[in-house]
Structures are given as structure tokens and as C-alpha cells.
Length: 148
Image (cartoon, rainbow, N blue to C red):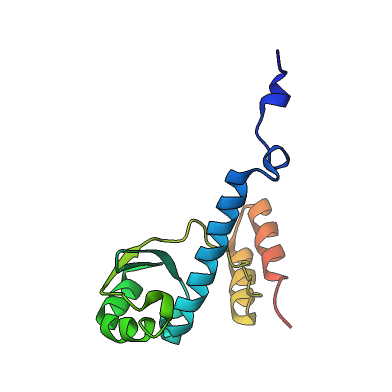
């Protein structure tokens, strides 16, 4: 009987198999088709737009939000005319746009603004009116973080 670790399917086990080669070939074809399509889509709509499929004359694109999808739909005749110039997509007769938000968004690093002199002065003033010694100490420490 095979051990559980031997039963797991890994890319090493699939290397050279026909199924994996066909899958990689399809993915490469899809990527090239997407590159061709994104070249003819207007610049302001290019970011966040992806190629989904092309079957029986129907071109399906996805947009990252509803606003961008509406703009693509509004300009669909212009886009389809430019897409038809590509030989592989010369028989496009219908354009469908789906909204597909990104799976994740890169979090922008939090930028902490240094404390202004006015806010530092107000903190020191408040610390002077506070009876609690620990709170006063914390307020004075915060006030010391003023920008130069």
C-alpha cells in the first residue's frame, strides 16, 4: 500500500504528462489572446480589465468594478471594431462584460504623519490640566513626537 505522501499529486509527478502539457498550452494561448486584446482596448480602461473567453463570436471580458464595466459597455462598438482588426477575433459580434473584483488588493503602507506643532501644544496644555499622573505622562510623551 502507498504511503500518503506518495499519493499526493505534485507538479513533479505530472511533469511530462499530456494533460499538464495541454493545460500549459491552453494557458499560454489565453495569455497571448489577452495581450492582443488589451492592446486595442483604450488606455483608461486597460487596467483591471481581463479577457475571459471567446466562443461562437461572443467575447467575454471582466472588469474590476461596475464603473469600468459600464464604460466598456458604453464604448463597446468602438472596442469591437478595433478587436475585429485582429485576425483571431474577426468574427466578434457580441461583447459581454462581467464584474469580477480582484481577489486581493495590495495594502498600501500606512503613512503616519508626524504631529504638528499646534497639536503638540494642545496635548501639552491638556496634560497640564490633567490630574491623573499616568495620563499626563502619556500626553506629554505624545506631545514630544512633534515634527521638526
